[in-house]
Structure formats: C-alpha cells, structure tokens
Length: 293
Image (tube, rainbow, N blue to C red; front, top):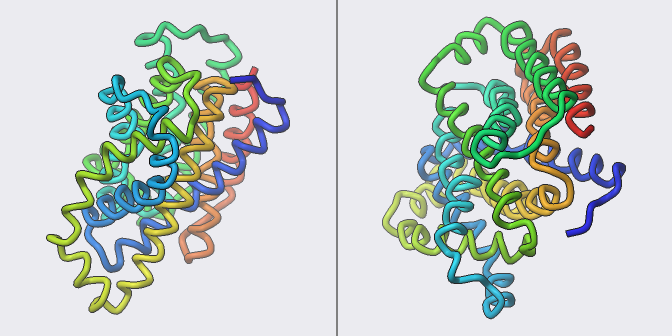
C-alpha cells in the first residue's frame, strides 16, 4: 500500500472519529429494546450480511489458508468488543465509555513495542502520554457526580479497558500480518467467518419478538443497523486501509478524537458537560498531532 498525504490522513482520522464517536449513542439507543448480548449479536451479523456481496465478489482471491488469522482479526476488532462495550453501557454512560475507549493508543504502543517489536519515537511516546493526560482530565474532572460514580464502577470500566486492549491487538495484527491485503477482502472474510455461524442464533432468540412487540423495537433495530453498516462495516474498512497507509500508533489515535464526538452526542442527549472537556480536547488533539511525527 502507498503512503498517503498528511492532509488525507488527518481527514480520514476525523471521518473515523465521527463514525466511531457516534457508535456509543447508537449503542445507548439500541439497549432501549435489546439486551447487550442481542445488540452485539445483531451488530456482528448485520455487518456480515452487509459484507456478503463483497465476500462473493472476492471469493476466489480470499486467502483461505490464513483463515485462523482472519478469525482473530474479526474477534478482536468487532466480535468481543461489541459485547464488552454493550455490556459496559448497561451501567456506564455513553460519554464515559467513549472516554475510556481513548486508552486504545496506549495499549497499541505497548503491544506494538513488546509483542511486534515496532520502532517508536520519543515524540510518539510524548503524544500518546499527552493524549492520555487529556483523557484523564475528561475522566476525572469533566464529569457529573453521577457519571463519575459510574466510571468508578471497576467491573464495567474494566470491560471497556479490555475492549481497548483488543482494539490495540487488532491494529497491530493488521500492520504486522495484513499490510498488503485489500481492506475489503480482509473485512469480508473476517466477518463471514464470524457472522455466518452467529446468524443462525437470531431466529432462536427474543430478537424477532422484540422488534415487533417492543414499543421501541424498530427504532432500536434502526440504531443497530446504522451501527453495523456505517460504524462497523464502512468504518472498519476505512480504518484497516488507514493502518496500512500510515502506522498503527497514528491510526489508533482515532480513539483520542472519539471522546470529543461522544461528548457532543452526550450533550445533545442531555448529558453533563463542563469546561474541563475543552481542556481535555485540546490536550488530546495535540497528542494526536505529536503521535503522527
């Protein structure tokens, strides 16, 4: 893959932050009618269905001999995080989860250096740490008492942190093992391996009943559909290509911009916002800038 210009890399990063930053409010709306496991199941299977035409088109060119690695990519990049984040949001606000997700670049750096022997610079380390400080400002100073008490719920916060670690593992694997694989081929095979077996579970769940009979069934299903197609299918494909054309640390730094979008949605949905959020955003954005060096 060819490297892309600085401007295009930043534009792609901002687009991804908008798509993924909106996912937390979508999960929140999905949980009105469905359980966390149902939200995760629908998100993964609907993404798999959306990828089916691309899977069929690329069928002959897919690297079937590497299917275990593709399955790992699907599990770490979508499968497990989908259930972890949905479960966490049954007790944490969407804003809090979006903030905790900004830990991903820290784990990306750690895993990349120690597991994949990636080179890194002092400026990259400084950028990651500065972004982490900005996230800390948002977490510890920029929340209402109610939200702060939610974030201090160790178990559900730990689920988000584990999800961030899985994302970090995913991005390092892509850079190390799938640098020259077309992102559409990568995503379509990964989601087929994960989504096809899970699809058979839907008729045996309460999902069809809730869609028809729950007062917000169709609205929640619409939120999951947008989450699956836009925030998962399209966003992941763009993200995989960004990893290939820049580097894992810069790409994972999208998690620093995601809280900004999550905060905006939270404010729109009546959640608490303060001046500390502005300070956190400034630190985060400058940290992303340094991580690109």
